Image 1 (cartoon, rainbow, N blue to C red):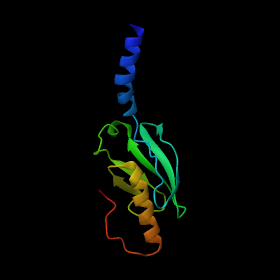
Image 2 (cartoon, rainbow, N blue to C red; image 1 turned 45 degrees about the horizontal axis):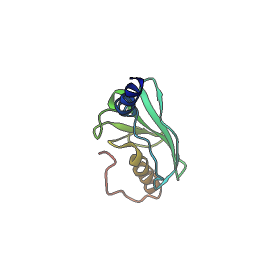
Image 3 (cartoon, rainbow, N blue to C red; image 1 turned 180 degrees about the vertical axis):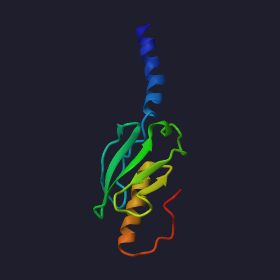
Image 4 (cartoon, one colour; image 1 turned 180 degrees about the horizontal axis):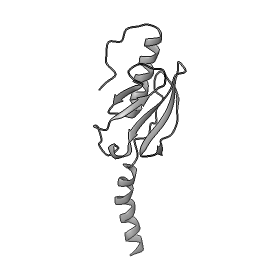
Length: 118
């Protein structure tokens, strides 16, 4: 009986626990020098990262929005960056690359042809 309960726990409890936090980023992203791990603080998940230009920022999402797959409102906060320091995305990992690309192009005074807001 214990074996059956253990197997049921693994199959049914693990997926729901895995969705209680934002997706893990696995790849290197263009224009992103490094990124850290997700941490939960006061109901907000946060993952710090550094762009290749040296700009430090973080991807954030409110804990209650994590379950809204594809609709979650991830936001990037970066001190000293325009747009009221906040950029919104529906996916956190590629958002780092998009943000760092924007920062790199902005520093080189190259006009962007797309909006960061999804």
